[in-house]
Amino acid sequence: MTNDSNGIENENSNNSSQLPVTFIQKLVDNYRNNQLALINQKMAMDDAHSIWFDLVTLKNFIAEVEAKALAIDPNVENIDLGIRFYYAAYGQETQQPIPTNYSKKHTLVMVPTKKEEGLNYDFNPLQEEGKALAITGFALAQNHGDLVPPGASIVESY
Image (cartoon, rainbow, N blue to C red; front, side):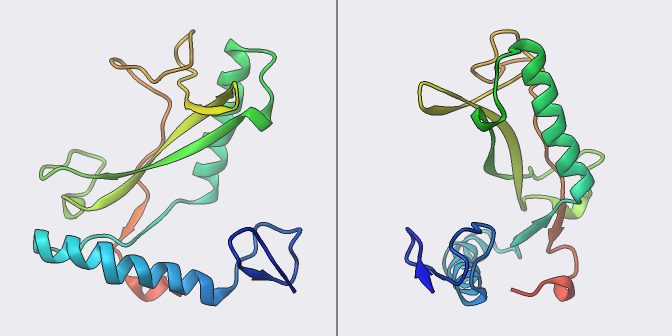
């Protein structure tokens, strides 16, 4: 076994997609016992603690980022593209397709990034200049997975 840069023991240090179950549980517990507990107490609610996206949605979003980035910059390489996950929250009033029971709950917004001069900038391939996100109009982004709660936590392992 070896330790990675985070001090995590890993039998296969070449596979960055593997984490020890105990480490995952510790991270989840840290969030639930600290940030989530304070949010629930302060806001008197049962906030979401997980979000699920199906693979088709994720793959389609990634493919769209790649295709639109190439359309405005034919020299862009996939290694320079990424996705930033913003922590976000729905408002008091939701609008379709967002269910009303998602009101005020945590969510994620995924935004493309493009590396320039060693920095991963938020990137909107719907704009010709591309570098910064649109202040008005539309930006390429993804949101609205299934939240738990209000979804059933019986499907979760952590």
